[in-house]
Image (cartoon, rainbow, N blue to C red; front, top):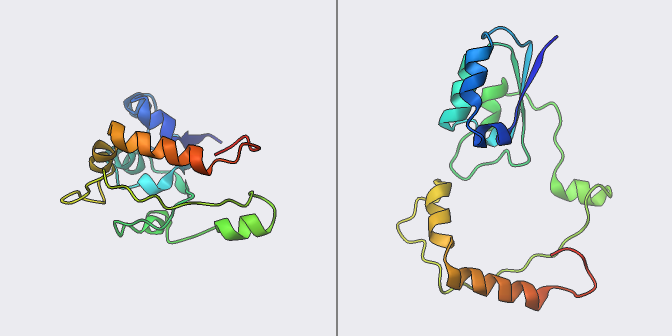
Length: 147
């Protein structure tokens, strides 16, 4: 039984078209999609629609802000669900603190919040990055190895 793992890293490497040339649509019994919340992206759709095996999606972020319902692509079936707070309560993840930072440099007016690339273009500015670094240094506990 052949299983294809479609990982986000494969998408980034732009080698997805090689998969479409090398393998027949029915060659895999199961196709496992990592980062399945990207199911509506063009690259994802090419693979998703090409291969005909049973499709299994894995994601840590099933609820999307753009209204895309990820589970509809996987027969509306959720095999296992674990919420972050349950994982923390069961000792599977460490507790964490998060801090809101007031950012006067960031202007998201007229930015489509459903388009990640548009958001990244706006937040990749040095003033904003310097503020973020300053706040990390303020909040970071010197006795920890993580931020």
